[in-house]
Amino acid sequence: CSNNDEPLNNEPIAARITANINGVSETRAAGTEWGANDEIGVTCSSEGTSYVNVKYTKTEEGNGNFATLTPFYFSDVTTEKSFTAYYPYKATEDMTEGVISGSTAATNQTSANQPDIDYLWADTQTASGGTPNVTFSFAHKMSKLTLKFKQGGDVTLSSMQKYKLSSLVLEGTFNTTNGTAAAK
Image 1 (cartoon, rainbow, N blue to C red):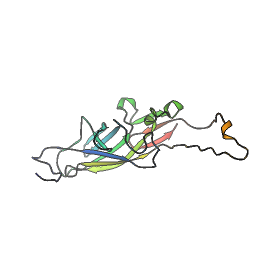
Image 2: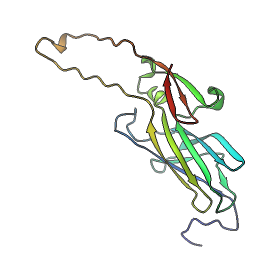
Image 3: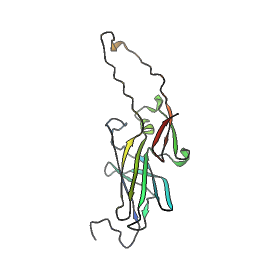
Image 4: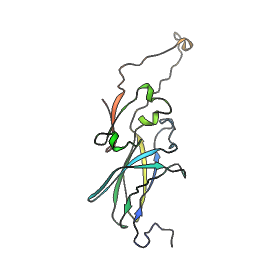
């Protein structure tokens, strides 16, 4: 027995997935912390083998630990596998060739619905049975528009009842295979 991450009895070793969110706080409904039961989609590939869009769910122990019912296994200590990930997880049947269609309309801008349009992407990470820890560093792929109104000499903010923004594109896509967000 040792403290090293070495395979015992040549048994397959499961990849251990952890993740953090880079960026400015308050760019996400819950800041830069994962929410309870957040789900990410993970793709794993190596020579001749590919596992696409496997759902990993945030565990209760620790902010960035994720687990799945169908983990990726390394058959030996030397063969490296490449991993990418995206958020929020969508079932394969809810996208077209890895592309999610979405809308940032007002109904999706509530605290409850915002995680569905807060697209995050993690660049490729490699791991092997000898080093099975896969640590994703997620980056935001959408823009956040924040308006700050300042009272001036000829403007009284207390009398302002509404405002209107025009020419904003609210429909778009997020490609889970390469992390590209695009307006329609």
